[in-house]
Every structure is written in structure tokens, then in C-alpha cells.
Length: 272
Image (cartoon, rainbow, N blue to C red; front, side, top):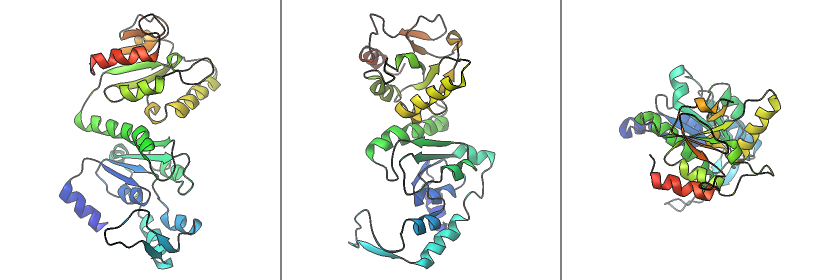
């Protein structure tokens, strides 16, 4: 930890991203914005449970050519001792600094519930323990944007997207809708809008659909309302006419019949 603190003092990072064991160490770097991806908050126990004691193989090539190493019981105890220092500071200030991302297919580390006992910003994403390009771009990058926008005091134009424009008659994503969302996220702040009904199951169904097909970008960005005309923002994409404060993009109309028609419109706007 002394080495990590020294590096932080020298480099003064804007954001620290730690994965697995690195996520566990990053949690203890108080005062910095940080994203913990599948953090191994109970590393000693994890190593025992998954047979990580004894001869192990490095996942990535090393400059010195060494390919194997030995994990001893003494080393496991050291990891167990260091993890007991986690969550030493979960003050209100730290709550704003720390994000936890947890892969829903991670069979190695599962500390989501433990993390949520201490921090509020805990998000599940589609992915395994080891990150790949897809899970990084679709899950980590959106959070990086949120952190960066907050640091810079940046307010992106807001686009409200009604779920009726996203879900087809079979309950699947409409053609090109996910592509459109990925592109819009680069320049806009997105919120997903659904009806406020009297049936609690409807809320659960909407959240489940957004989790499955939109995932991380929908976290904390879902609005249930029957008064769309009161939404204060820049654009509203909806299948119905709404006389509100946001510029209406009437999905399904002659101008915006599909998402392939909506995408070029926002490309021409260039983030305005």
C-alpha cells in the first residue's frame, strides 16, 4: 500500500480503475475517484476456495520471461490480513468517489453483497471475471464518462428515450436500437422513460428488460412517469406525440420510422 500511495502522490491520477485484486487495493486509496471491477475483497478466502495455492501460471507474459510462480499459505494469510483493512473509510465523501462493477457471469469472485453493505454505487454488468473489449466498452466506459463529467462539471444535452421505442412486439430490442444508444452515449446524457403503473410487476419487468438489453447505462437513469410533458431536457424520443419542454423525436413517423433514421439526425446535430 505504501508503494501505491507513493505512486498516487507522484502521478495524481484523475481516476483509478482496479480489477480483481487490484480492485481490492484501489478501494483503500481514499480520496481518489475509483472504479472497482470485480474486486476481490476477500482475496485470502477466494484463493483457498478456488485452489489457487501452489504452482500458478501468469496470465500475461512478463519481460523477464518468468511464466510460473508459487502461492504459499503464508502469502494467502498476508492477503487475508490486508483485506481486513478494506472499508476503513466509507464516509459520505468516499461514497461519491467509489463505483463497484460486478460481472454477472463471474464465477471466481462474488463480493457484490459485501460491497453493497458499505457503498451505494454498485452495478452489475454482463461479463465474466476477466474483462474483454466488449464488457469494458459497454460497462466500464459509461461509468468513466459519468465520473469525468462530474469532475469537469460538464452537463451533456439530455435525451429521454421512451421504452416503447426500444421494445418490439416480441419483447426484444428494436433493430439498431442498441447501436443507437451506444452512439448517443458518446455525446449525450441518456434517460430511459417508462409508464408509472399501479402494478409493481410492471416496474420489475421494465428494470429487468433494461438490465438485460441496456445494462449499465440504465443504472440510475430510469424514470417512471405518466407526465412526459414535464420532463425537462433537450430531446424526447417517443412513439406518441408529447407536447412538452423537450424537442420531440416522434419514433415511427415518416421522418423517424426506425432507429436507422434517428441515428443520422443526431449525427448531424453533433452533440448539440
